[in-house]
Length: 243
Length: 234
Image 1: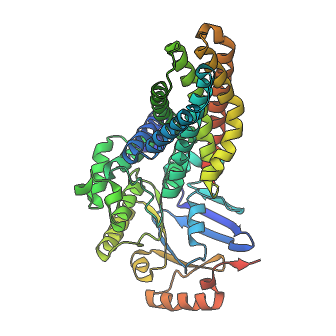
Image 2: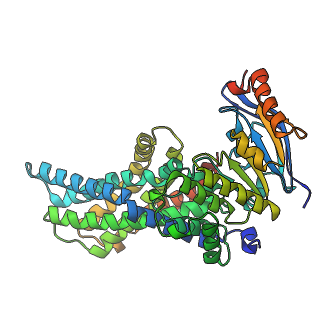
């Protein structure tokens, strides 16, 4: 497998007259924990959904694991995980049943053991047989994380993963990300939580005016200062570009 | 260690079975489809009974339309949430990302909704005989026509539900899209066949009608199979 497991070039995406992504380029290498920051409405979720093959860009090319195009879409999707800021779970099913469904869809062998392992990892094993509808938002997010990692993806996209999590759960999430990363999983994470994001980032960038500004050398403090400057000078806080 | 089979992806049958079981569990727990169908079936049949208690009419002639209007309206509102709830809960994205063919989602939902709607149609049929003092026709023939008509109804209903789930005001759009197609295909042919059964004919006499219903069934199931890929993607 090449080191570059995702190469995106010239990505464009507009909604009506508003261009949110403008010739955006991005490369993810195996083992990265890439954290992308940006204010609300700047196009972070659109970008992560494009990268996760959920929506199409208007223009541009994306290569995942050296594969490209519609013919490879199932092979690509087998290797990626995606977790949104909304948990996206079946509230009428139990925690265990939610994972069981996706274990079947991904044909995970010895699924009972894997489900138990994942529920223990997100500290929900004691609630395995409770319906998700009775869970708090934080518990739903943790279960969504378990579902995202259930099939052992090589690359994981997380969209505002700290949203709705208390401090303990945020720390647990970062522990899980670090542990999985040590096992070779690549993460692409978008957030506006600077403190939590910088804590785990091995690469960091800022999305503003439809492009990514990468700051590889900046220390955390410098990055925060530059982040604020970029938002002010490039109008990142105002979202996309009006055509 | 990475689960090896995860790289191979799910087999179609096990994925369809997983969706089928998931749909049934959800349906029997929140009873969204079952409750709306039961109430509507009861209301429609009770309304007909009330209306026809004031006028002279031939129950045999009206039995088939009454039965199918009941199936049609109660079933139509039961089909609306099938894809809508995936959109509302955001689970459509998770299903889209799974390495399975979208047709497995279609068939999983088709089989589960067929089972539920067929069960409720049979219950409505029993209610019909309670409300209307109708002599029993050849029940095997009648149930066969109901099964065949329900297959086409559920297949097209699932397809239209998937289309309308992505549209705003989908609850309104589903009947707008569904009624014209269903009325002139499955419902019309099923009403005619059911009428002939109440008139004393058997399946052997209805070969042409059955072939026509079967043709609609095949067209609607095939349409769902072919179009669902496009509907599940953006």
